[in-house]
Each structure stands twice: as structure tokens, then as C-alpha cells.
Image (cartoon, rainbow, N blue to C red):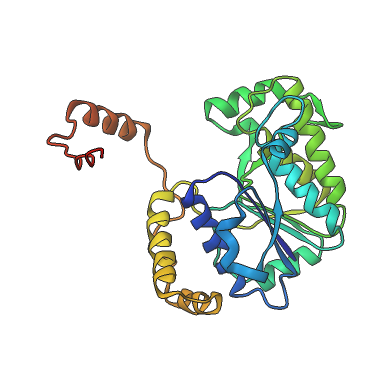
Length: 295
């Protein structure tokens, strides 16, 4: 099994997340993981991992090219999958968002991939039945229409794309189908926020039997603040103690993976109240250090 991360930009918290995710997989990786590919424009954040990872360096020009004719940013995720699958099409491929970690059996996940089962993180429901404004609008725009030769019907589910796992069979065909669906939706000006996610959902369900990766992999997209704080503390301690990768893996045995929820739904009313209170009661007595006098 080969792992793939697409990481770009200079936000250090994103790179903290990626490092932590990689370590969580390395704990179970020997004999299962053949390579860990980092497609990134910031390789310096991964030097200490040494030979444990392979860097695929990209720059702004490549990212721009991957966005395609319609400049859809998240088309780059599908292109990264294509790049790595083309390099080693005979090895199962597991793509991971940065805000993920392994908590279940990698061996069991690998065995299911070997039987021809594909994975995405979780099934969110039929697009026709989802209730957000974006999802309702998207369904109105795509229902009954062909994209990539697939007519979108009520049976087509939206899957969370924080994890995308492809067996070693038909992976290039599935990725090519996802790209066609994505590009044709962009051409029709379908609301863009979830296009790459739905394109992968449709392409994989049209190609493989599907399972949720949630029993194996945590995806804390809705609780990043809590997880970022704990992960930053863990990696800062590693830095200060100058831990080797082997010592970091040993230290993970004491990391409490149950300390934070991986999903939390917060009502919009709470967000609005927080913004209102911040506006009505701004902080007072703010001080900064004085700048040094110019010589």
C-alpha cells in the first residue's frame, strides 16, 4: 500500500497535522506500507522523516495547471491521485487529508483493499436527500444529467473525501472518470464547493464496492482547534527532546487518541452569538512592546 498526502502552503499547523498523521501510520506500517508520497511545495517541513517519505515537489505553476481549464482549486486532489497512481498502478493507493490519523487496524484495511474494495472516509448520504443549501443546489443542478457518461441519480451518495483508498485494479480508470465528472461539472458551472468530493464519490461507486474508512481512520475536520493544540504539544516536545522518528513512534504509545472528539456539530446560532459578543465586548488595555529606537 502506498500513502499519499497533498500539502501546500506555509501554514505550520497543516504541516504539524501531516507529520502526526504520517507517524500514526508508521507505527503499523512495516510490511504493509510500501511508500509514503508527499506531494508538496514545502519539503523542508519533512526533512526529519528522512527515508520514511518520498517528496514529490510541486510549485505554483503545477498547482495552477492541475486546477484545469475552469480553475477549480480542488481538482488538484484528483490530479495528485493520478500522478501517484500512474507511477505505481499495481499498488493500492491511500490518499489522506492532513487532518487524519490511523486508529484501527491497517492490516485489515489493506486486506479489504486487496479484495477490490475501495474506501472513502464516510458516506454522508444520498445527494438528493442532503439538506445544506450547497447540497440542495448541487442536486438541482446535476439530477438526471450525464457527467463522464454517468447519469446522476438518487442512488448516488456523497462520501467524505478526507480519505480515498483505491485498490490496485482499475485505479487509473476510476481516477480518469473522476476527472471527467469534475471537468464536466465545472463546465456546466455546478456550484463548486463539493465538486471534487462528489466526483470521486460517483467515480468510485461506479467502479468498486465501497466501504467507510471511519472504523480505521479518524478525520477531525470539525474539531481541528482541539487536535491542533494536542498535536502541536506532542511535536514541540519531540523537537525540544530531539527525538528520532523511532522515539516519536514509541512516544505515540502514550498519546491519548480519545481525549478529543473527531466530530462536533456546532449550531450557527453559537457562531453568531460569539461574533456578536466579540463585537460588543472587545478586549481592553491592549499593550505591545515599544519598538527599539533607530540608531
